[in-house]
Picture 1 (tube, one colour):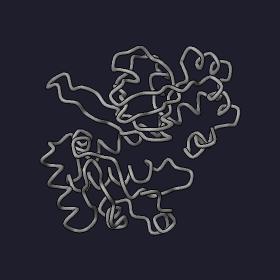
Picture 2 (tube, helix red, strand yellow):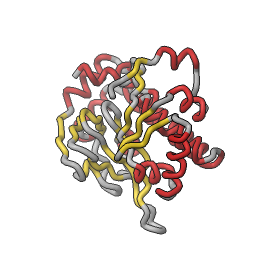
Picture 3 (cartoon, one colour):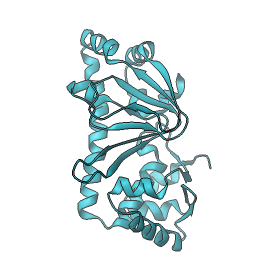
Length: 239
């Protein structure tokens, strides 16, 4: 599956590990709203979104609100934490659209990794990449205005969280206001106000369940992620 090599982690793995993952994986098809795995389930292996999108989040037991941690599209990986620590899933993963996911069951993967221990380091690298993103999000929440947090989330989504081998810039993002509000832990009204502010400055345009980036450099500058060399080299993605 050559497309998987567009993800920088998978592409950087030894070829034997790439082949081992693919040989032990199987494709699952999910309809919108179907669950890949649920919070509290026993560990179940490593997964990669091949088509469609997954919403990954959890329920706050104190007030019942649903926090959306990540919105994963091709070719993002998930499930590595439960694979490493053997604890139950900490979040839900639910299909947002018709989706296909490569699932490598733990029962097949773990014994193979134990027989090839150097590859556990590659799995740990995947987890560390996710941890860095989550720590950054926590710092953003504590130190940034909501407009800057929003800009950073949009930049991450537009650039595949920086995980693409050949960086591309997607101009249209499927991110409804409800999803953005749940990602940032604020009300939909707060997100609506922040989006209107960006739209008034012609940085973005807001469509039904979709955000269009009009001025990528301005958005990246607001997010604190503007690097002239990087952004000048980015190829524009699809619409």
